[in-house]
Amino acid sequence: MVEWCPLADHRLGRAASSVRNSSRGARRRLQHQVDAAPTVIAALLAENAALREQAANRPAGLIPLTRPGPAT
View (cartoon, rainbow, N blue to C red):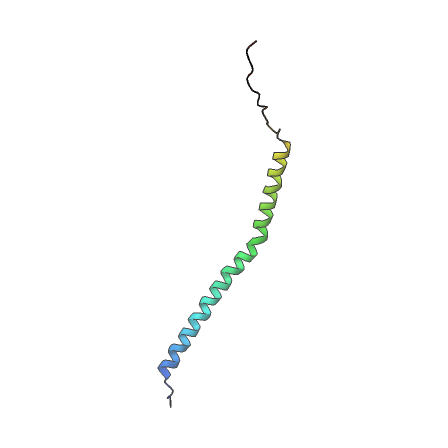
């Protein structure tokens, strides 16, 4: 039969409290990332649209390659 030990109970309480605090910190960090995601996505979409527009307005820049023929 196991006897109740106040010291062990106190240590378990501190360990549980530490886990709860660590979990809260991780949850808070994750929530900050989730909150920032829409801003990051909007910025990437705007940059993508600007790059597409820039590419559409730029001439193709193709240079025809011709074979050198005999000198006339």
